[in-house]
Picture 1: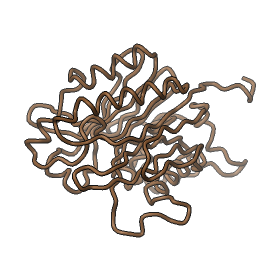
Picture 2: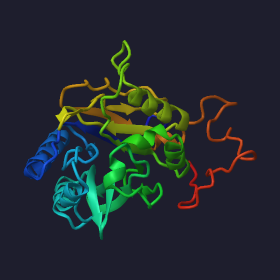
Picture 3: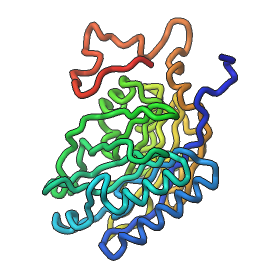
Length: 297
C-alpha cells in the first residue's frame, strides 16, 4: 500500500455539553445529545463521543434517585434512540449512561454503530460519591472490532490508572474513547496553557501507548458541582490534534485521522519501539489480566 494512502480514514468528534441531573431534565438531556451529535454528523464526523452520564447529569442525591435515572442496556429508551441515530446516519456513537441490571447500578458506556448495538463497558474505578450509587464494573476492559477499527472505552477516573489504557492498547485498540465528568478540584486546576491535569493524563496515556484518545468531558454546574471542560483528541504521539476545549463552553471538537495507523505508530526509529521494548520477561505482558487476549498491533 502506498504510504500516503489512508487505510482507515475517519473524522472523530467529541461533544462537550452540560447535562443536568433530575428526572425533569432527562428528556432535554437526551434531545441535546442528539442535537449535538447531528451537528457533529453535519460537520463530517463518523465517530462521535458523548460524555459520561450524558443523558442524566451527574449529581444524584440518593441511590433511589440514581436508580430512577438508570435504564437497561440495550433496551432502555436512551440507548434505543442513540441506536436509531447511529443507524440512520451510518456513524459510530459512544455515550455514557446509568445502567440498571437487576438491582445493581453501573456507570456505563455504550458503543453503537450502523449495525446497531456493538458493546458495553462498565466503569471499573468509581470516584467519590459514585461508590454510593454504583457497583464497580465487572466486564473488564473490552476492545470492540468495528468496520473502521478497534475501539476501546474508559470512563473518567479510569484514566488516572495507567493499567487501563495500557490493557486496551495491548488488546490492539486503535482509539480509546474516554467519557468524562471531570470535576472542579482544589487548585491549582490549570497551568498557563489552560490545561488541566486530566488533559495531561490523557495526552500521556496516548503517548506512552501510541494510541488515539478521544476524551469528551462536560461543562457547567450540576447541583453545585462544577465541571472542567477541557475535552481533547490526542494523537498517537500524545499531542492534541486540535485545540483543547475551553473550560466553560459547550463545543464540538473534530479531528481527521487514519485510525488504524496506530498499529504502526510505535516504530519511532530503528532501535526504539514502545510495545516491543516492554520487558515482558520481568513482568506479565498483560499485567496479570485474563479477561481478554492480547492482540497484535
